[in-house]
Length: 107
Image (cartoon, rainbow, N blue to C red; front, side, top):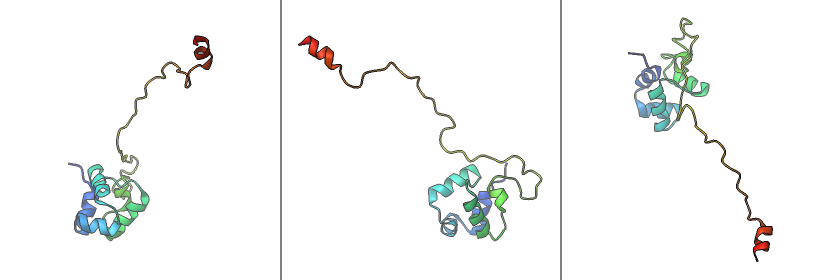
């Protein structure tokens, strides 16, 4: 089982509510961090690390390894939503306004 640094930080701080108050984030943001195991921005990684009084490093929270340099070469990505978007090919051009010449010729 992989170690989740965000979970360790939340447990160190004293739970989800205390973490929300300490870092000033809402429940759903914290839930996404717990699910991914990574904090997406440096600002929040620093705030969360400071709230743990250094028990969990900023590098661990940012997904850069254990903080001692041994596995910091492969960062984990914070993914939100779909990884790719499929676009439809462009369709035939449709005139935006009806042709006034054709309407005049029909009358």
